[in-house]
Image (cartoon, rainbow, N blue to C red; front, top):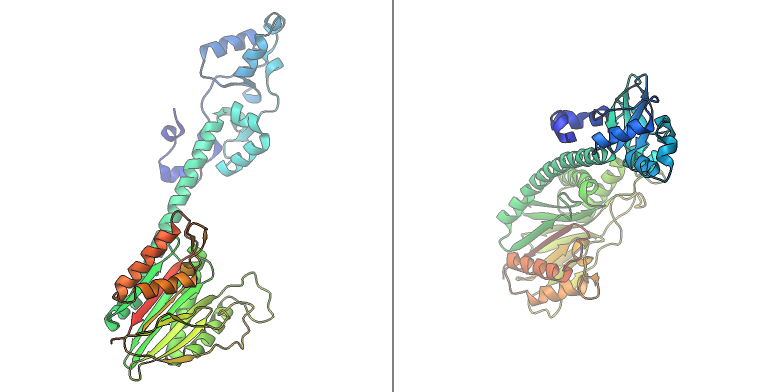
Length: 409
């Protein structure tokens, strides 16, 4: 009977599985049994891999079926040993574990015992008396089931975390779609949750947008997005949206404080974020931009190529980012029909193509020029299609966020 058939329902089983759950009832020999009797027992129980040897109910050894039969079949061995005690062919140091031993402890003990514990099995005792024989295959099965159950719970947690993260970002996505008529926004975490985030806030006299790439991806990156998103929201409430560079200072200090990454303090972490902060003044049609290692791409009507507005080469919040660090706000008077875009490095650093090299800024600029006449939602889709084609069978390296908009002509 399989382990799955003999144990309690899954929730109880995975709550605290123990060695006793693997103990299968079995016949046993004693030191008084001769090898001839053992031979007979093994003949009656052809599926028996090993035969425990007990004395007063306590296990003292284990006879491996294959080894015993190969030995007793040698010339003259049967005549010499058939009337002698079976202890002559038993393993005197089998793995013996208490029924209360957890599966994790049992697995470690099995590895320490070597291959014989997996091949011959292990003896399970309760109050020192033999409870049953455990098999390596059943141990591997329950470990696999236990790991699958743990992974399932972890994935359920991560999937719900994704719901929360997407809900957090949806407010900005809705505000963006309501304010900008020709814009695109792509947010693709490498895993279920991600370390990128965006923020878009509408104001009576303009709008503010941020595209940010926090350290890492997956769960660690997602944790940091919560800290950074909250820090940016508080900075906006405190300073307003008109000075992106000042907002970066405020966010950087908040990250350093939250992660105890103050100047001169040794910490286990060195985490922060790269970002582009944008303030668009609707009255003057002027864009204020500050970048922390995240440049801005500008393509004006009639312009042959894409202009790169460089970012400051300093990330926010990192342990090696000084507390007195400052970023630069650059004001750009935009012409009607101008196209602007910024993205995290998950796009430009993606490996692909015949040479397995990064997609790069040049391919991104060329793609913008090729698709410049498309409405921004279709332009964003075209860029992602080109990236997917370039990536091919390569593994996605990082989270990806892309934001772009075009002014009315």
